Image (cartoon, rainbow, N blue to C red):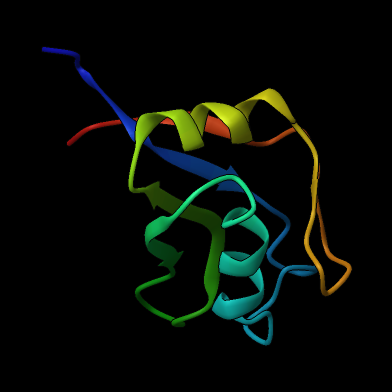
Length: 92
């Protein structure tokens, strides 16, 4: 059994650019080009409720996550840029 959740990727982004007005739907549409998205979770600052700059995306299968990882820069359809920030997240 692997110690990694190989279906989940972590995306790191600048919260000033990738702000609360960025829709989850826009992000999901982009990553569904690689496979079915099971869940997306934005980390938020507990005190302010603002996004911290980290989101976890879980795919239905490992192959989809691996395809995303092959391309390190992803341009979301609303024009926001994720620069060289996708990495595999450990399972908790």
